[in-house]
Image (cartoon, helix red, strand yellow):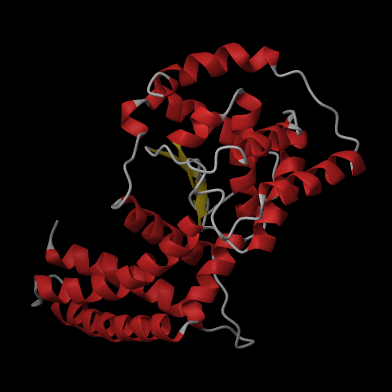
Length: 294
């Protein structure tokens, strides 16, 4: 990859993220493309510290993706800038997290904890609910409002304008800048991605997690899954605090509180327990490899 191409790519991301800082009303807003590039940058940055399981079991990834898209198509944000992207993280902790623009990660521990496809769908429905409720976008905006982040973006914008001028002057010639120039701009953008990634992985605000449970329950019902599966999954979650660090961290509500709230919604919406047996064979087939490592 040429230096010119690297710089042009970084400049594009710099311009997109920097433009998030202004709107006609003086508020911070994100376009679909801005949300996508912010999410992709944060997800990519986080993956450098995580073990990706995708290539170890591509059939499981395909299975997760198909379940995810079944829920997505019954949601209120079925279309994203570049579609939804699902990934499996190799981690025994029970966790799932969602980056802006529909980058949804689920841990092998969360998959192993599920007893059937409907419970697996419940995890994904909760994460997809975050996207529908724009919680990742809110997290991005809040991060962009922070003084240090704004400072980093401003520095990135300065470097970006310098790069733009160099690119314009060079036109068809190879521009005169070095790997150090790339490092400066990457560092500014990387700092934003790091901070946003930390917010996402640790979990959203307590009220946002409860909202994701509420909508997740509805998405399960819309898709034809057993809506009670979310309650069943969380009930067992509360008994495994050592491995459920992700879904039981300080940002997430106590499992008992979540169960009470979910039971109220089940009663209010007259959701009925559904038979999960028609899907149990394919669940056992596709999750056999990951569960054999327990």
